[in-house]
Image (cartoon, rainbow, N blue to C red):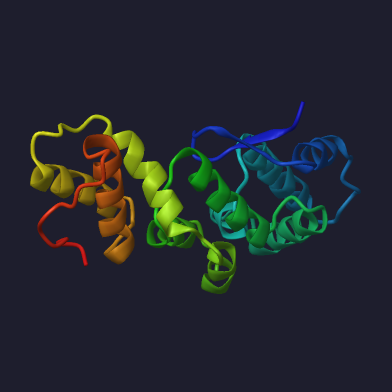
Amino acid sequence: MQPTVRFCGCQPLSLTGFSERLSMALYRKIPNDPDPSYTKAKNAALRLLSYRARSENEVRRRLQDRFTNSAIEKALCSLRNEGLVNDSTFAKQWREQRERYRPKGPAIISQELRKLGVDREVIQDALSGFDSAANAYKAGSKYASKLSAANHTVFKRKLGGFLQRRGFNGEVLGQTVERIWSELFDPLGGTINGDSQYD
């Protein structure tokens, strides 16, 4: 059975090796240290990581009220060395989780990662090669099945609004709306009059 980690209460994400490293770190005896708050800070960080993967800045923020900066930085250094905190890996896994379970546009994913304290360069790297069209189609298809075929304009407005709230825009949004409309309600491929309001 593959190890799993939960992101924001969503579906579990498989992380090969992460759970094993976390288990080893939880049970490994921390050597005696002149700063006992380091041991407590690291144990608190490990408990946080046992619920779900987190960014380095997120762990730091959660520990700030309870521990000294030096204890937090020592704990984070140790966690980085053990491979339990890595913003690059975290950002890529966050993107994969979003693509798999709840597709969102790159702007929303980037915003979520920035709120979690991930650097812009790391986010850009994680989002390189992001397929907006495929993700918009996946997000829109499920939502569109609930919409009525009575009126193309209403369909376009509702599905377009949904996709915009999910972080998709521009050409991808317009093409996705038309593709889903034609697949659901115009299977013969007839053309629909009217320009997209999203171009």
